[in-house]
Amino acid sequence: MPGTQTSGGSEHAENSGPSWAPVAGLLVVCGALAASIRSVAAPISDTDVWWNLRIGEIMSHRVWWQPAPRLSTFATATWTPSEPLPDVVGAQVEHWWGLPGLAWLYGAGLAAVLVTTYLAFRRVGDVLPAALASTLTLLALTQSLTPRPELVSLCLMPVVVVAWLRTAHDLVPRWWLVPLTYGWSMCHGFWSVGAGIGVTVAAVLLISGRARGAEAVRLVVVAIASFAVVALTPAGPGVVLEPLVVRARSSYIIEWYRTDLLTPAPLVVLVMLAGTVALVIAQRRYEPVRIVLLVIGAFFVWYSTRTVSIGGVLAGVLLVDALQAVLESRGAPLRPVRLPELGGLMGWSLVCLTLLAVAVPRTSDSVAVVPTAFDGRLDTLPAGTVVFNNYEVGGWLSWRHPDLDHYVDPLADAYSVSHLDHYLRALDTEPGWQRTVQASGARVAVLQQAAPLSRALEREGWTTAAESRGYVLLTAPGPG
Image (cartoon, rainbow, N blue to C red):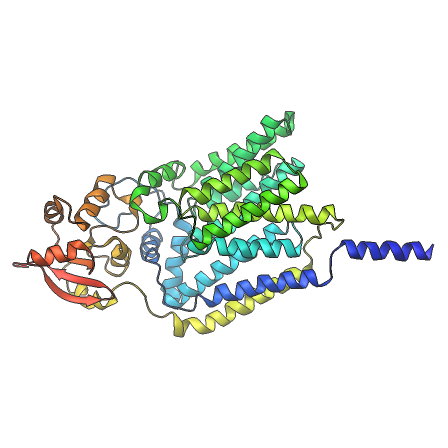
């Protein structure tokens, strides 16, 4: 009957949600994308960029299975490069297009993070839930959205988490996770978290009885293979153990300190987790995998500033999943990504990156934070001159002045724990600091003006040769 068909069509349109929702959701994502890329049009200020560039320069002229490069004679610890691919790419981009090219690459990385996060979320949620969750996730990642190889992890983490969440639903082994993890392990150390989540989900499915027999075997093989395949990278099995090296030095790296939960990014994660818990309780969806992932997300946001981003991704995935469950309970099924949606998102990304390419030659052809005014004087020093420096400027010294021998840099993995301890004690002029400086053989120092060591060296007769951006260049008394 015609009347019945009309009624059915009307009900389907109503259940699919308001017609403005997809457009509004896509506009939210595009707005967040534009704001993120706009923030890149500025001088590079992250101090880790420089040692990444130096490592990339070295590794682009050698085979990766050789011993890890050393940026200083004081870097005596054994370590394994965990970011060779992005380091080499970054160094090559800087070689071709200078600092503006590096800034544009950073903008492309931010775009990739938001686009991959949104498209991954669309695998489990409709446009509006995915847009809301991906925008909140972007806010949760703000402490980690820096021009570092970590951007690769922030692109891949949502993909992997969503893949395992869908595996928990359909029990289909996603074998592509194995080669994905292989490539990820040559880009950033958070691959171990992605592989660990896979092992956790597989274990929960096995213990809860959701997966049995051949199904369970296949899922366990995917999870274990994602770990084992990493040992076959050019860097060798050392990549598997590298997270333990980082953990041993976490007390010397500020971003590995315990999270201040009252700062904006962790608060966003906590709001997403709380919202998800409320939705789970309201719908009584107590699936073991989701509960375990909620606990893991809460742990990571608490554990350290560095891992807030992991908690943010987990919270975002679980939030969009819970929101979609609400929509489906009201008769609104998940609509797949359509070509107009994908084309609009990609087209807008291209427009933003094109505008960024026009802007960066004027906005990003300089360096922020580091004392570049010292470069002329440092260039005149003989090769091999030891510079006792603040940790923050070590990366700049390694890249801009590779012939000098700096005392420390942010690549903490390459330094022994005792060396880092001596450095911090000397910086605070604790007992024995004179022996540390003397043993280094330094005749030049680049330190923060406010550092106790700066004032102590001046009292010992060191001379202030220059000042710039809160740093002081000191020279030792006596000949040379």
